[in-house]
Image (tube, rainbow, N blue to C red; front, side):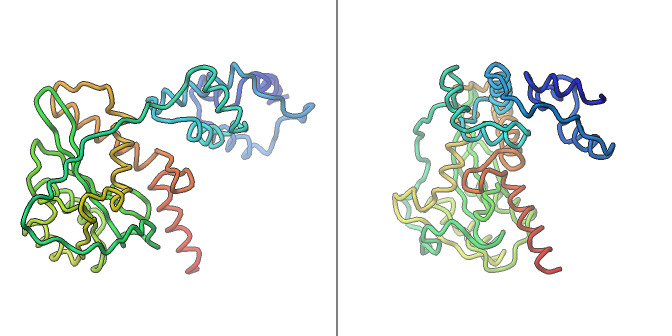
Length: 299
């Protein structure tokens, strides 16, 4: 009889919703039940979660991720939380109740390729799927409007896991912006020599200071073809996710306020955001799973 009340409530509310209301984790509930060696008494079989309960859960996920998730990621979050529901039903209910991800929007390109500096060969050739971490990094610059003026953001992505491994934010687009992002990535990861660092042909990446930093770290420079954003598509996708999912429609009084929001989003992106290219797991989870697999192979 210990779990009889749960069976009754599950007819209306998923376990995840009940745990949220009671302030306990879903995993903790099931672990406790497993440790006790008891399971709820068998009933007439699982009943369909009501549409009202499912919509409430969908709205909670949509709000938690600040409107960034459309139905595919909401559905994956429901499954990960233990709510068994078909994707067609989630899509239909979200459409019926007007629950949708933020709309897409085009943004201005910031690349300054009108310079006389040497340009590196495109070593990447749109191969965005390296076999292991720290083999290929890509980088780009974007901008964010604030009442104090522009805030520029440079990021470095590990293309294996799509994890943002380094970033820098400054009120200018000088070479130090991208050099600082590279330095952060190197100190965090310490990759072996031979890593390919891919970027566009911007003057910051072509500068003597930045190219010298790459050589000092034992990295090979690779650059996109002129005017071809598809050669650096993963980084362009990162900017779209950031601006559409978090920054679009926001007004920042200060650069500091914008920086705090970007850092919060980067943390969310690396640790929590479900990435479609990675089979709907987060970048850090994808990499952790890979490392676990390598240990298992070596055992």
